[in-house]
Image (cartoon, rainbow, N blue to C red; front, side, top):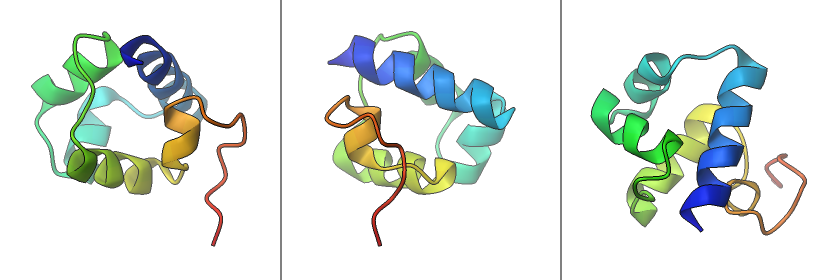
Length: 74
């Protein structure tokens, strides 16, 4: 699961032109944590996952590969 999450996270960061540092600041987590996620070292806990998905404006299901649609359903 870490590899799918890392791949999707890297893709969204690239697509939005956002750096890991910018995501860390926007999501309120450390740069180190984001580095671990994009390098598939670990996956975030659910609370952090919510923060990352919100910061990127994508669905959690997309980040974990459950759907190919990144849009958040509201």
